[in-house]
Amino acid sequence: MEPGRQQRVRSEGVNRIIASEDIPVMSADSKIGLVATIDEQGAPHISLLSSLQPLGPERLTVGQFCEGLSKKHMVQRRKIGFLIFSPSMEIWRGRALYESSATSGPEYEIYNRKPMFRYNSYFGIGRVHYFKLADISAREKLSKGQIIRGALQTRLILPLASSSQQRVLNETSRAMFSQIDGLKFIAYLDGEGFPCLVPVIQASNAGLDRIVFALNPYREELLKVPGGKAVALFFVNLLMESVLVKGVYNRKKFANLSYGCVDLERVYNSMPPQPRYIYPPLKQHEKVEEF
Image (tube, rainbow, N blue to C red):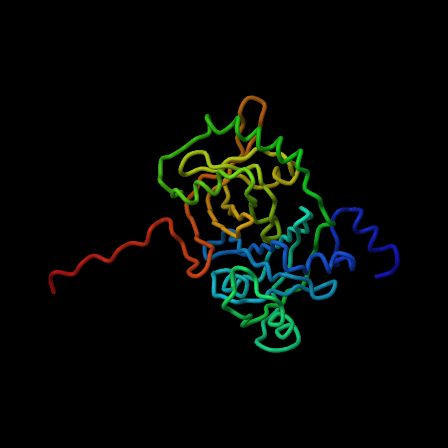
């Protein structure tokens, strides 16, 4: 890319390559990395994959240490979205296409020489997945002031938006989405079929089967989320406790305040050692008494 071209692209807010000065920060082990894939029902799925990192300016890698649904999704349906969140609250978001995987090679060796993450102390990296970058946002800085404002607006909405027709959220997941300092993100499918990730830290559960959030910050982007379509919401905190919920998104209005509303249908336990759906509950096989 010729001199000056990268800066012109960055000024528009979306890059075709990763800026060289961003690569070391995006590669740090202390970051949070999220990957959004497309699940078996064609809905977004979000996974915490902090091994996500750049491989030069045009590619990304993920080191796999346990088996989860996201690995199957990314191989079967190649389009992904990703988000990297640094300890200083800087964010990069983008889209990529799955390329291949390997169980050996230089990236495999580099991953397995890294200090183990807190949540995989007993596992090495067994496979490396490779992605071709489609595009990436310029470096963003989350505004604490806007987050607080959005959280206060969400609190105003909660009493009138509450719904508990189904016991979708258990006590643990309900407590997670009630945490003011927890990190929350929504994923939706854009017009090109890529999953897109947007921070919604202001989100909170409104009863047992609904999550709502004010459209602030990231208002312009949240207005692009299509109504009546499936979305995913992911919660993670600094203790690496996490949960994923899925449901149907609609935009609603309270007085002059527009807000996002997700009616929940599925809950996925995203934490090791056994990532799996926990709602709806698995059907028990009926006891056979006659032959």
